[in-house]
Image: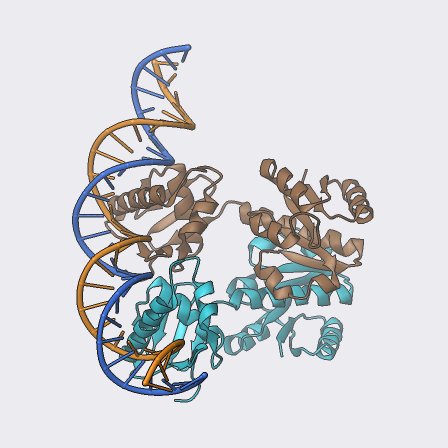
Length: 222
Length: 222
DNA sequence: AAAACCGTTAAGAATTGGTTAAGATATTAT
DNA sequence: ATAATATCTTAACCAATTCTTAACGGTTTT
């Protein structure tokens, strides 16, 4: 369930938004001042923030500079949003001028949430003690960083995308055929072997098990 | 005057959009197929693209992968946008499902154009002692200004946009292919070499590290 | 028992990264 | 327009890493 925070000093708007967003299945937190929002944010991290610019306490603009990693949709009167470009450069993901259509706001919330999801995605895959970062192409196992070759990395990534499921040998070969077109079942055998060796050196554990005649998988069981 | 390109095979929608957007003061180009759009884009660069997914010729998805540096708003039937997250990850800036309200589309176009403007505007990328000013095309490292060639600048900018993340060699080649279409992995090697040399001359430090078989990155660690 | 599959080992082949230098191309100045 | 300069590409080389091949023993299936 996605968490949305509303920051607006207008009690009427605030409550209306909260009601509707709750109906839509969001978990809603309301704040009526900049300082109140700041306090809440120091201990929580919502998935999206609806922010009015004209606030008692800390201003919306100032609050926005402190918010990192959470999309902000600015809700404000037309007069307050003179510099829309500056607003977006200042970190706003989107903005709407009051009065606004509820349906449009819902659509924009949807876009921003999905966008955040897409951005957060594909960063770190985890399986037990193994974590694989697709940004930095690094693999850490039980605290130790492991140096993997391109092919080993590709194989482990494939397996970690379907933990506990068998990945067919042919699937693996196809998937890495761009990098290593000559890879056969013979050489795949070796890559699996080297992967096992490196993982075991890091964690002292077996992760990859073979499924006879089919392929390989990460085993859920110890 | 902002230039908008419409890519939709539905003649009715296409003309209606063109009429309304022209009224709004945009300069509008219409294309009725993926291939037509591709041809136009090879010689022109609009400020925003409205893209239908179901297209004769090249599909919208495929076209999107080729579009760089121009915000794309996907316009498509609900059924065609099953994977919204994938869509946004694939590079779409926003999407709307048909049928849509014209006013809402205009608002979203406005947001994307302003956002692009804000992004293109003068900002300075920083990484440790390096700062790269996209306005003046200057790079300062540890207090010393560095003269970079166009290609070197483009590469460093790419790396600095994702500090600590691997940038694939192919990504780099694609991204600088506009300026230097003949650049291969062989020549990329040299540009990286020259970049390293200049950075080291300025700060006496190594910044760029290679990820074997993948690409290059700016290393967070010293 | 024979055939197919998996695990391991070792060695040679192929790829990649870093470097240097020379030739080709584009840009700028005269 | 021509010359001078800067930039880019190609080629060659070495070192390091990675990939594939081949062989052998053990296990599972037919």
